[in-house]
Length: 287
Image 1: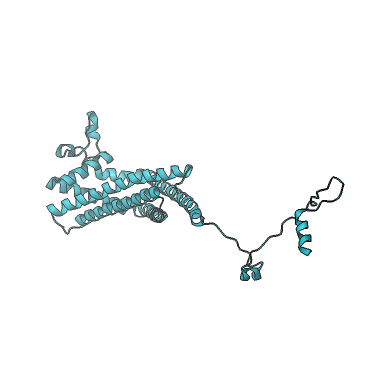
Image 2 (image 1 turned 90 degrees about the vertical axis):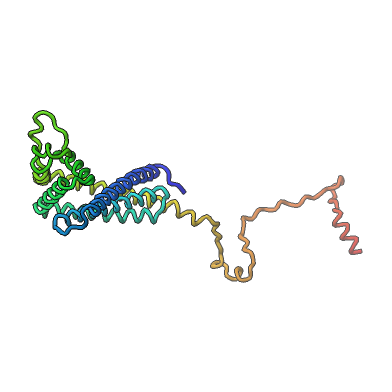
């Protein structure tokens, strides 16, 4: 039985949003897999520390993509089919996502300096590897990073001549482009409150979707429960009249007595009570 009213809006909202969420997860998964596959084909598995960190980041990217894709798939399919098991699994994944969000917030603010150094070293490794190999996957990665962070290379100004992955600048902005390592440090040092706000906002969104999924689950349960009681319910009175139930004697409930009207008596023209044909037959039989 399909849900109606405001719960139907929740159903379609969860279905559409989680469908696009699953597409985003699939995109992350494919991107991480292509970067990993390109690294394996060109250079093989090197044993230096930065290369291992690079592959760990790729594994995290693929794992995040797979998790987001599964989350969106369960949410979209569960809301569309109104399936309680799928929505329950979706709710459990949301709880896990909320726990991961809290863990990331704690890790960012407890090991912030170590995290900044790791990210700077990782960017330096990727940038130098691109300059040495000119791989397409690394080019795409650097183009995305440079345009998102609005930075260029290790020096900022000179790297605009060396590579074409930096965002285009005009006028005096060419001399004010910051390097990416310094931009990464400034993001955590000056925008710590912004990162905290984004993380808290993400947690609020997760809690909101948890509430919506619980509302949809409760409505589906309430609408599926009457279907199990469609058969007529037969009430018995064996506990009131056990002897009649054993003898299979139908129980006749007393009704309100109605006064019987006096019988109609036919009078003859002479005022004498006329006899009925039935009474005459009785008298003849006696004779």
